[in-house]
Image 1 (spheres, rainbow, N blue to C red):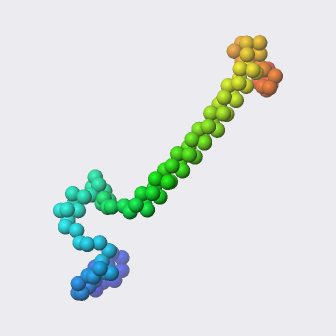
Image 2 (image 1 turned 120 degrees about the horizontal axis):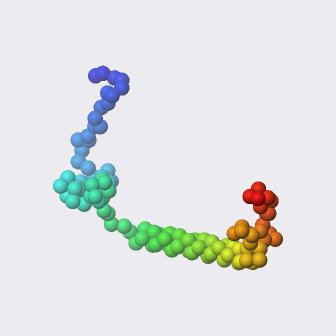
Image 3 (image 1 turned 90 degrees about the vertical axis):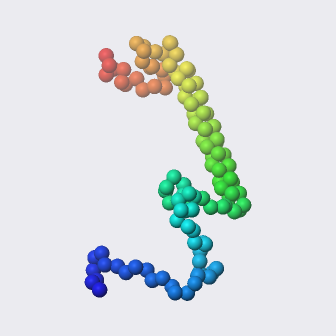
Length: 113
């Protein structure tokens, strides 16, 4: 037999019949497998245990909690930004549409003139 690139042997098949301990899943008819495949991706629908479903649901609830807390933090920052804009960029602090309030850096104003 030639050895080198591309030369490989087919896996050996056991002559013994498979047992429950050597077989991961029962053999599936190829036609049945095509029916069970999910959009021809090679993924096959299988039953999930109750523990797996509980874990998945728990992770989803935890993710929703973190998304909600992130949304609250972003909302607080946006409200603070809007309050700052209203206080620092009111009509009395704006010149020619540019905010020159007490907190803002007015050094760029000289560049525009």
